[in-house]
Amino acid sequence: MGKAVVVVLGIVLFVYAVFDLLATPAAQVKVLPKIAWFVVVLVPVGGPLLWIYWGHAKDAPPKPRKPGGPTPPPGPLGPDDDPDYLRGL
Image (cartoon, rainbow, N blue to C red; front, side, top):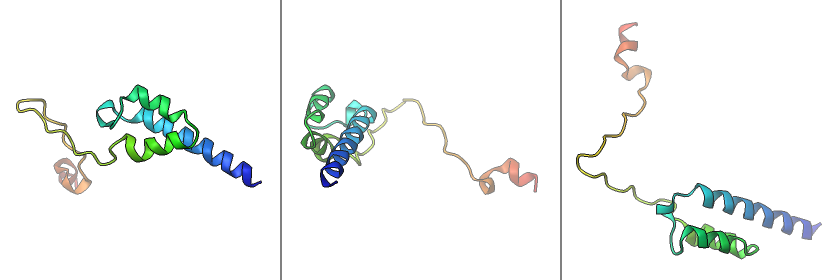
């Protein structure tokens, strides 16, 4: 039973690392290129752990916008900030 738990945890760790690697933008990948991380993740247990700890920047600061570039869309408004909604009250 104990061996099965270790195997299942290893598989879960591998699947998590692969999907996290696929979802991470190339600009946030650290140390190695993204394609090299795919090879590293194939190493049982150690590869996914290396990816999780050293492969990507979890809280990478946002890149500064270029002056004159497109402005981001405004964020969502709550009902109390929406003038049309307030007019209807």
